[in-house]
Length: 260
Image 1 (cartoon, rainbow, N blue to C red):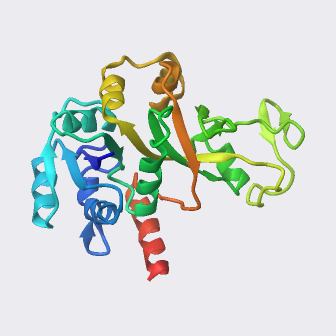
Image 2 (image 1 turned 180 degrees about the vertical axis):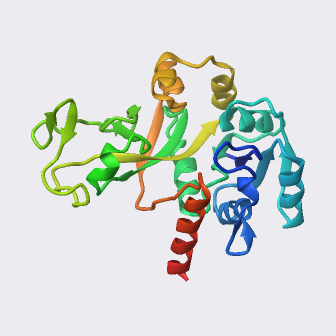
């Protein structure tokens, strides 16, 4: 199966305007994502899909490939669907443009998941080791079945460990400090937001209206589940760190410094 990585990148951002062009160790954020994606063994091509001529020109300036897309898209999925409609690939991988720590092994993993004919979409999860992350609604949790298919994604702590956790005043309480590592009996997984789509599935999802659960949790992947599409998910040992604010950029730079 032929595969391409499409990186959606828009200039406008409420919290961090011009984020893809912000410098990280002297190079634009989008360049880190692009060059890491190029190291995938299974993807034949990498391309940036943007609504910004400035981003478009910047990608070309460092030797990358880019396409212009509509400025009216409400999500990165819609943006990559437009770009993919002009291409002839079996699998489209959505790598977020604000994930400079993305690893090529993660891209290869989500592509390989679609070797299972039952899977329409592939994605990743990593085990949570901090109870603080379990309680953080910005950390998306996922529960899967014994064959690795996602059952549900939520901002809430799922599954609820009834024997280990207690409800107090409507909130979850856990023994010990929130910074403590979780006991081995508690297994909760964080969703890593990289996706592989079969080309026809991506086009279908983009054409569907926002679903009930998607609107409730503000999680786009629930649209696929609500419409009967199966998402296969693999556990990874790798973490990523998205950049939403200038402060996040500083944290990522510290991580990169620690690697070198």
